[in-house]
Length: 469
Ligand SMILES: Cc1cc2nc3c(=O)[nH]c(=O)nc-3n(C[C@H](O)[C@H](O)[C@H](O)COP(=O)(O)OP(=O)(O)OC[C@H]3O[C@@H](n4cnc5c(N)ncnc54)[C@H](O)[C@@H]3O)c2cc1C
Image (cartoon, rainbow, N blue to C red; front, side):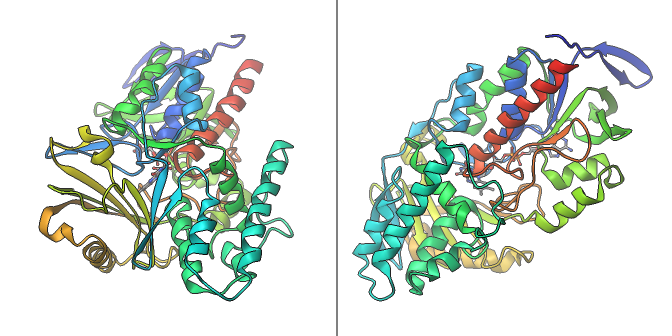
């Protein structure tokens, strides 16, 4: 490596010399991926995490012998995330879901293929919804997805979802073919479950990009012994060429003359100053501004954050039971027409190590009716509870709710840091300060794959910068 950054760490009054090239703030999956890629490519990397566990919303908390996910559960195979694991030599151990996905529509169950989103059209045709231009809907959906595929092959993805001609939201796009509310609710439930916003909040082009990317992925699965074990390989990859500190909240990103200089981090009760050439933040664009101080950013950048960034809320319910609560053999299902719930999974059915022997652990996600106003927590919980009792009545007989978490838009761990298309670029207006993670733009991806895509993009940019030094 042509450039070697000499890093000085001031601990208390003493000064220590170390040679990190990059500091990464936050060990969400974005931070872990960026840290592991850069360490593997030969740059000395320091990862700092404020909590006492790695992974942020892709982690595990143990309770009564159950391994509870802190957010994400379904991980796609052969996508951007698994590719990073391969590149850094970490083991991506995930148990695949069966290829059939249950859909509960207005109380009735149907099946579609997990890796072929167009089988949704078959489900729709089975619903016997008449009227509108349904025959044209299928053709147009396939055509839009096909168009995206060609654009992506030619490297011409829609960079700006607000560009002229790309302004329809998905609900408006669908309205061209049908105003049937059952159909609108189905698409809304799918969009909420995978893209964490409502169909009227999502630029239509983002939906087609997502469906195109999804169609190219082979399978999806679950980490058999919990997410925190799955991510350990990335932590090890970082430690091979750097350090990773838990329980170390960053207090400040240091900026001088418009350039990031390093961080101030609390470690073992003392403030430690770490000077580095590049700082990468996985804490979300808003938190990055707080840490670096808004005075250091351009007005244009601050305005863009204010005007553009829109987070998505979510509710996560985890229940223990002696017997399955989902329909027979349903590992995972999408629910349309419920008050709040949009998906459910019996995760210990597929991965028995997530629960004590013979027990079930089920996972439910819900979404409020409005993403723009803060949730009324007790009301939202009541609505979730009513959905659970109505759709999974055995929960009252055999089940115990272990966790009912509200991930509101302004919480540390929202459902999503940004709706697709309402996210920020990775570069900030401060030199050598980058954002990664789910609040950053990565067309066609959501959740962990989105965070991984942003991590790779920033790792590539940082490598170029460091090689020039
Ligand atoms: C209920 C729910 C269900 C989901 N289901 C799925 C799913 O099935 N599949 C999927 O792919 N995605 C899913 N997601 C989304 C997925 O969890 C996220 O996209 C992904 O984990 C985002 O990672 P991230 O890199 O943005 O960082 P985050 O997970 O947001 O982590 C940020 C990290 O930064 C740390 N941090 C913050 N401030 C500081 C500081 N000052 N100093 C040091 N560290 C700091 C935090 O403690 C945290 O560890 C779900 C999310 C939720 C909430």
